[in-house]
Length: 390
Image (tube, rainbow, N blue to C red; front, top):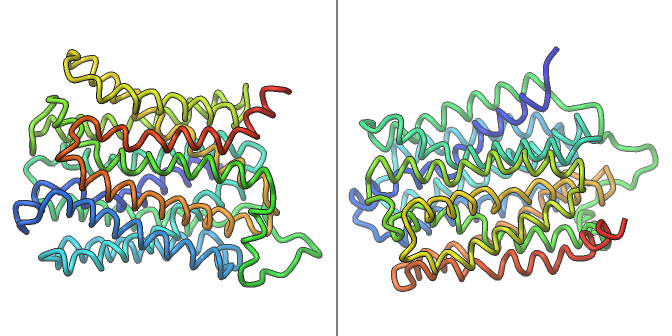
């Protein structure tokens, strides 16, 4: 008998490897195209902008709830693979690269939020733990291009990126064959899916608290993932272009794939609100400490970065689970997509500021990310305070 959650999370791993595929080739792109390191942030933000506009399209139009999530996922994974391959084979500078990375991001809007909806459609009774596995695979998918680069050290950067396209095509086949789960079907008498009905979700107090926590979390998360190679170099742990850099970047980002399921296991004992709050507090502590590590031993710096990598994403699935639980079932897909759109719009600012200022700020750039988890704790406060009083 097939395990739908396992199929979905593996497909998520393969599909989301498209997201940071260009970042794994950052050193080669800087040399080949004669661009500044800050322009790697611009390429990342092109993906983010595409994802934002894609999720807004799915959310406001209601498309995420009008058609089968598995079909949307499969089509978008195929299109994303094609756009990613075109970047590897056809792009020869920023003018051609930016539209192609934007297109990859737009396609990912049909992969990540719809993957979350698929999980809830199969196992709504354990959404928090199952979504933890899903986000763990998103995290590993984010780290995967660095791992591919490490494994194929002699490959061209184009070959590394093309591997991600192949994996995304495999993800499309897996989800197309799986189909949608039996839950989240429209209830008899449910309001019609009118344009903009998704805005109703923000009138629900529990959804609003979860979304505010998520927005603070997002200020930190993708900027940290983007800056991870630079933080490793600034810490003196590896040199530019080295295999050690690829290995450490893969480990620091990829360890979140362990942090997420551990958080999911813990949530079954203390609840998603308290796990999310603990992860926000842990990553805030790492943000605050990192600029003070200049004279620390290499092992201590590495341990702090690994702890940061584990805590920075461990809260993410719980925001999705809490938001899905808070809003009406007929708009779950649209609500999650809309929450993603706002969250990823926030990431664009922190990524752009982080990549632009890191040369002057050095290790202190971590303090740019600190307001995110602190404000996220404040926004989530009504939910984790209520959980403590039970």
